[in-house]
Structure formats: structure tokens, C-alpha cells
Length: 334
Image 1 (tube, rainbow, N blue to C red):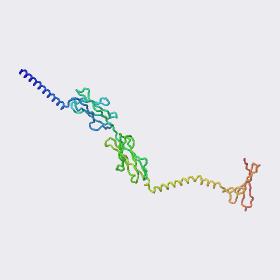
Image 2 (image 1 turned 30 degrees about the vertical axis):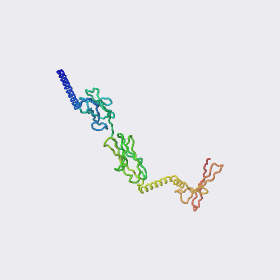
Image 3 (image 1 turned 45 degrees about the vertical axis):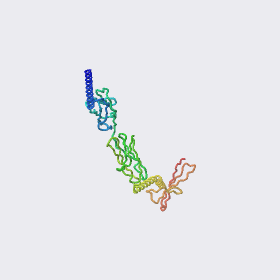
């Protein structure tokens, strides 16, 4: 009986020793597995290595994919829109690195990464990643509806960049001093401010600045100046007035020539002396000064178709020569 009990006690001690040894081996295995990074494969994480998610055209970017736990080797595969891009095997816990070139707008994503090991043949997927394609800002244009203003008048200034990724932030300056808070435009339109012209100091040099998410690429516009109309000198105004008066005088003289001077000249040219009995013809250069030649015209009788036309030559009375008369008839027409 005592031998049997001793045997049972020995058997129990043996099983207890085996159980303790197995537990110790399992603990050591768990510790080794934890230390070596082995275990159930976790979902990998996908992200950029250096820069953020903003990219420009023709830029190279590097993204990493890694799982916190898993049994190496781990196979990492990169996808874009469910299409495989590249694949890498890692025998350690280091992440897989993928280098991409942004050649067009379609290269911005979305991207995903898949991790596979011997314990997870179906694999685990990462988060989705999208890049933002940005365009550098173009030089803004500063403009106003008018470049001339008066004291006490409101004027507007507009600043606009034709190219550049939205949103675009604008700011206005007078000299080196900011005269407005930043205005962020989320659509392709100009930023506008209103100014009150109070003195000649308000006609200084204005500029505007534009920038977007493209870092360190802010652009400034060309300068713009207002001209105050009150600042024009009196001599300029006097010259303008004299010029207008002279122009009006020239126009008036040009209009008077055809209406006043020319008709008066023609009337004097056509006028000649007449007598009660006829008209005296001018003396020709060949005739002597003491000769008079004149003509008489008899009135036309209603029943006659001819009129008597007489030319009388009267010479000097000292010669006591008779006057000669030449008669002719002229046919009249009704």
C-alpha cells in the first residue's frame, strides 16, 4: 500500500515537472517572438517619406509601407486605383520604399499598400493615400478702373493671378506697408479693395502680393500710381485754354471765307457804271483818252422781233468832227 502511494506521488511529481518545463519553453518562445517582431500581421501604414502631400508636375516622391507586426519575410505591394504599381520583399522590419514620378494629374492617386506573410496569405491593406497637385503662382496684375482721381473720391484696386493652384491668398501694400488683411480666394477671381483718397499722399505707389500652397513662391505685382487732377499746374490749364481759343478762331475764319469774303469779292468784280440812256464800254488801251465809245439800245417794240443797237464813237470836240454812229439790229427770241 505504501509502495503504491509512493508510486503515485512520484508520477504526480513527474507530470508536474513536465508541465512546468513546457510552460517555461512556451514563455521563452513568446518572448523571442515578441523581441523578433513576429506575430500576427498588422495592417500596414502608407505615407510620404520626406515632404507632405503637395506635389508639382515632374516631381519625384517617395512613399513608405510597413507593418508593425508580422513574420518576415513580408511582401509589400503598391496599388493605384486597384492596379499594381510595384512590389517589394522585406526580410526585416524595415519599411518598403516606393519612388513615384508625378507626370500628370492622374498620378496623384489614390494609392494603397498590401502586406503579406506566411501567417496571412490573404494579406492586409493600408490606408488610402492621395497627393495634391499644385501649380506655382503667376505674377499678379494690379489694376484700377481709373488712374486719375480727385481728393475725397473712392477708388478700387484689383489684384489677380491668372495661373496657380487654388486657393490663392492676396495682400495689398502701399510702399512697404500693408493696407489690407490677407484675402483668400477659393475661385479664379480677383481680390478687390476700396480706397478713400484724402490727400496727395494717397497717390503713392501701390503693389499686391499673391501666394498659394506652393511654399516660398510668393509673387509681387508691378507698381501702380494714381494721379490727382488737382496737382495739374495752372500753366498747363492756361496753355490748354489758349489752344482751345486759337482752334475756335481758326474754325470761325475758315467758315467765314465761303459765306462772307468770297460773295463780297464777286459782287465788286461784277459791278460796272450805268447811264440812264445806255451803258458805257470800257476804254481799251489802244484808244486815245479823249475818245468816248458808248452804245445805246432802243426799247423793243412788241410787234418787232429786232431791236436797234447803235454804237456811237465821239471824238474830241476840238477837232469839230462829227460823231460817227454805227447801227445794227439784234434778233430777239421769245
